[in-house]
Length: 415
Image (cartoon, rainbow, N blue to C red; front, side, top):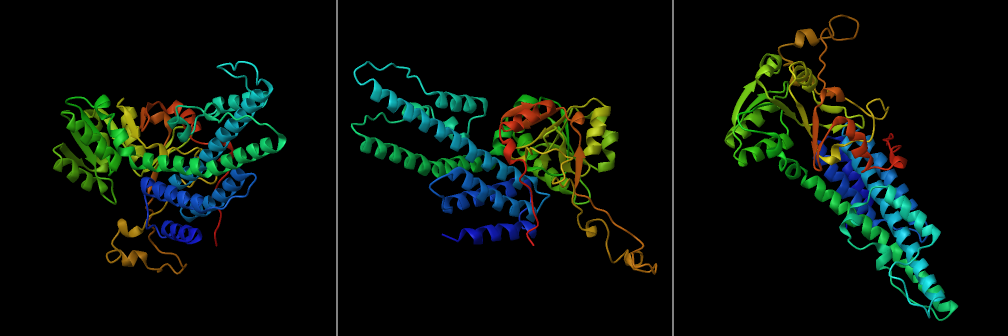
């Protein structure tokens, strides 16, 4: 098995050199790396969860710093930290409940056991905290609580009791890493199947004879539209080409190949065509805690046009794109400037780009931003793996996947 530090350095290099881009690809890469890192991590006998959290945070800071624009990297790191906290709390609750049941059994050897044993105050408090927090992925898969499944053993002496408690403690500490890895596997599966989960809801939102507008190219949007087509929905799609990278051309070609009636329009024609549209369906780069959207450049203009003509503006986003930060957070990099060569041919504009002014600066500047920020008031509906949600509900949905203690994880300089 490769050394864990080599895996981390390799992943950091890929992110820095932009060999892996896009929310889904970077999220899956991060989750797989953290799974390998956790599986090879050697934990102390005490405070295993705290040690594991510190180690994951250290790796997460390097990954986030490698490419701050890919917010999905930080999202996955925080999701994994949340998983560790939840699994530790679940195991602690189970251990306390098991000790309480064992103590009660020793005190009442000659009495009939109740079907609903009374737990200690510590176990009740831990269970209450667990109930107030969202369940982990591993807990959701288990039908029987840990406390019920805890083995019931009686002790005939102090030595055997001490050995039993020590064995139970060692069993709990060994199970932490196993449960965390299983939960991370579920996270990787969730990331891999997010397109399918979102596409299953297409038939509920797209109806016959509608006109759908989208911009650029989004794998999630393509699968969503094609899923509606497979359900015998007959509709038309307007695709704004998404200059300067013109990713809309590729999307239009794919939609037409799958039998959808598709029309390509220029980005500047969005306002002219929006009055014919029934719904705007777009993808997202990230969804912020306030319901705002970081999306490909040009989508804010589309959102404004949709609001002006009262056209629903629907955003499709996998859960791994839900970011627990707000756009004003200093660690959130909202934009990235792409190469000027996407806009201008240097050969034709070489005279303007010369340092001919004598001041050491070129005569012509080129700005090529990659993203737009769409405020939540312009969004009508979010469709995620878990269903449709209003923008005002996003903060609550995000709270189900992250711990408040982990929001401070941010990228630091690795140089």
